[in-house]
Amino acid sequence: MSHLYTHTLKKVKSYILSNSGTQEDVNDIFQDAVIIFFKSVLENKFDAEHSVDAFIFTISKNLWINAAKRKRKLIHVGIEEQQLASEVHTQLDVIISKEKRTALNIAYSKLDEACRKLLGLVAYEKLSMKELKEKMDLTSENAAKTMHYRCKQSFHKIIKENTDLLSALKP
Image (cartoon, rainbow, N blue to C red):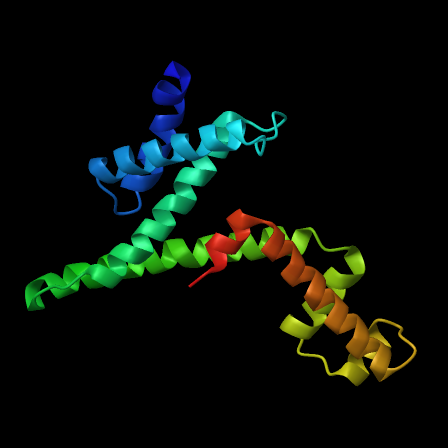
């Protein structure tokens, strides 16, 4: 426990304070993360091969992102305070956007090579099914559609099965 409070708490504190949080936010988030960690251990959901430090930090980060989203919805400010709130919103949007991009990259990396290539061609190069058939050396446009569908389903499944990714991607 002392290691958590001397080492891990410092990392959590640094992250939350650098992302528009307060010391009170740090204390609340860290306490919740430690509780979640202990529940995970008691329910045999924590894999001992993973770092406790990284696990608690990740939980804290996700809790802070969710709290920041809720805070953003609850802010009611006057005209002078609106500029400050706008800056905070922008910072929170950047944090949330980075977290979503990171979550998508993690899910994307778990796909097999063929699906990564196919989804990249569709998303970034905006290829049609006909062009996809040729680029991926498939037998027909229907084969391209089927592969595209299966790859999207695999991607969604990866996200749904990982609660950290799922919570990072929720609006």
